[in-house]
Image (cartoon, rainbow, N blue to C red; front, top):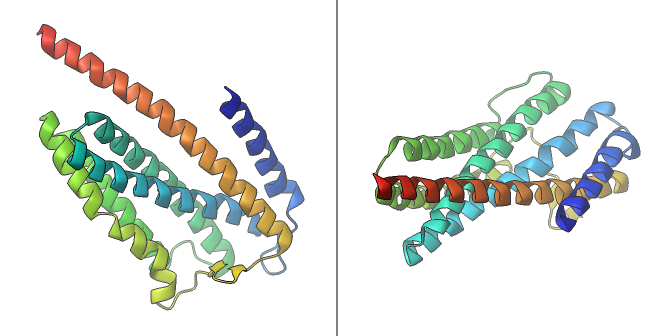
Length: 217
């Protein structure tokens, strides 16, 4: 409850800084506010898919189903945040470049990333054998992770319209925008952690319920 309260407070601060505190951009004007709804979910989705990778490795090593359940949760939530990333990116692209989609390397690789993990989720839903679902789901979660790396590095590998915000020297933006992005990252990360915990508890309860039903049948 304490963590939930802190998350709520930081989320309200995030809303305030996004829509009131952060000044309009010199070029994009008020449309710069879309930026904070785009970057934070994108980075959080990368982190969630990193969690999928870690859970896959742990399941294959330990054989404990709790890692498979958690890995499935990170895929579902990673897809949710990637969807937010794609939709907010289309709004940003329309404001910045005049078209919502132009097959830019970052757009394309992020879409491929979404499709790859959506296929893993579809596979998991289609397999009834619990052991096979956990084993191959974990393997696919590990194999798909290079797409996360490719999506992140795409703006450095290919020529792109997408701005490079994070440089080795720091964030390339105004101080107010930098502060707002930092708060956005903290708020969205905390929200994602709460969603992971709740989803894990629900899926774990469903798993136990299914085992009880199988034992009784």
